[in-house]
Length: 480
Length: 100
Image (cartoon, rainbow over the protein chains, first blue to last red):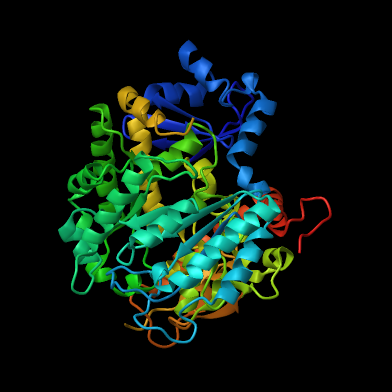
């Protein structure tokens, strides 16, 4: 909620607040925050004075007291946190194939079982996508290989990796390569090739074997076993760095399904057992196939919030006992909240990352605002299509109706409710979610499931930040 | 599904634009017809509509009205942010203009 003061006092004209049950969170447009008791908050709002000398020291530099406003420092902080506004599309998602050998219950990617026209990206198309990525105004780029299962198009993937590395040298533009695979087709040769090209590697891991295999069935085998085998392999290689090239720690993505609820501790324990230092508690989105299967796999935002809050508490308690593991959503938000830096979280930007921070290329070379928009295209709705990579440039990309519509509709300055929300400095809306779930790019935030999920995540983070011991642990989750 | 009662709303509360935008959001799900009657607009739901259609429609109309009111207040800063973002994406903030 937003509060306006009628008279000129120590307080700045507009602050946002949220009652966290016992503590009040105060935020402002500069991305600063302060936590205070209800009595302190009442005094601050009514008198305009800092409730105590200690709070005055905190509220002053944070831009909450008119007499202590240091506009130069506050604006520099705002610019640092919103550095993406000045960068251009840095993330380029290449969907190498729509084919997949798994039949995941919640698959949002529009995967198909067999090859057909347009299911695999050709080398010619992949080369054009890489050329387009390198032409981006962004000072550094990430090319992410996705699917389907990208290893099903290994020949083209391999060529594309080498071509991208060669172009990096020629153009002098820093490049990160990333692969997202289910690992079921991984072998020593492929692994060695990817590591030698400094490609970071990530898989899906939904938790213990029974939960993972139920969510991600693989005919005649356990997909969990494949994921675990190669996670261990890549972790071992990363722990024993050799000369010549850097080996990144492997990553894992968790999709929270109905079956995950109530099993937060077991899931975290599985990640700890495998030596993973990050766990990403990602909610399901009712997009694509997941929308049609929602009754079987979905849940309410309130159920997710309870799951998230309980699991985050458990992760923090493990850290307190010396186990290093971070929750990824929290660590990305903490990077913004505590360090004032943009962690590259496309889902929580204002405006969102669609087209202006990232683009997705389907196997035919059609360019979309994001991977979610690409999935909508595969479902038959080209609302989020920017154009064909053959003949597209960044001027046309920025001028495309899909790019402009996503940019305008995800601007929180023009979103009722968001514009007055205490979490606005760090949050973002998703036009694809709004369009799919609520039939308009703008959505309707009071009944928006994604908004409720994000509110729950922020509530859990700020409740933890209100407890000094937990806050100290969370502060350690931000980059140095 | 059942037939809903028609509604009449005051133009001082809901602008014509907000009602039209709300009607557009429901396109393909049920039919909405708007008719001006003096200082009021009559909202008609011809054909079969979901039970909560009228409530849903008014919620959306309120959402659109709030958004339009907010746009009047914040359009300057909102436009600066969107323009900045699209300009960066186009490469237009570099020397030499838009990058091809």
